[in-house]
Amino acid sequence: MINENFVIVGALLNLFGSSSYVISTLKGKTKPNRVTWFLWALAPLIAFYAEIQKGVGLPSLLTFMVGFGPLMVFVASFINKKSVWKIGRLDIICGLLSLGGLVLWGVTREGNLAIVFSIVADLLAAIPTLVKSYKEPETENYMVFLFGSISAFITLLAIKEWSFAHYAFPVYILVICLLFFVLIKFRLGKKLKFTY
Image (cartoon, rainbow, N blue to C red; front, side, top):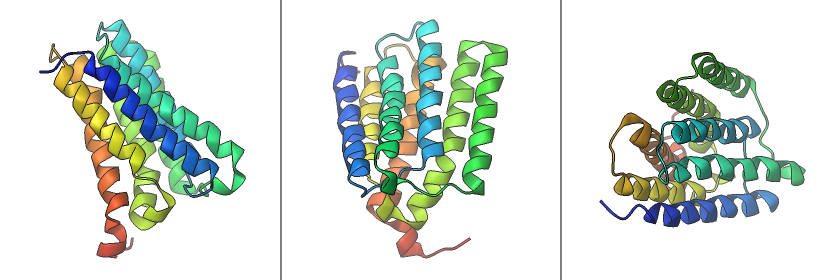
């Protein structure tokens, strides 16, 4: 276990990764899916609120940054009109299901359920960008996911109390960010050439 203050280093790395994605979006090199990035902002910010309510403390900074970074990307996607990914039926379906998960949290108002529903909502929001990262990795930027996974790993090393509220979101972020990193950096979809 490392000192809890290392979470701040992780948060700064996360901010650096998000900033690189924002800059790439503003230049038109990266084409974010607005549905995904909006919901990636919303779900973690709700989970952050739930973690604060459950007394998670400094490790909840990761969850906040995981929401704040996508909020910056979402806003940047409106500045450069050429940087937008076309929204299709899958995006809308996953977006609605993701919002449904957040509504379920609103009904229950229980901290751990809020975290579960936020993870489910975040994962559903990720599906369109996972598909895009698999099929067209050149429209993505792996740096945000690399630094997101490092930030999550640092947060996990700093956790002192291993309760669901403390570790659930960081574990999820580590896994999903590593998946995105591998898909984009190593262009697996282009190498495997599976179509569906």
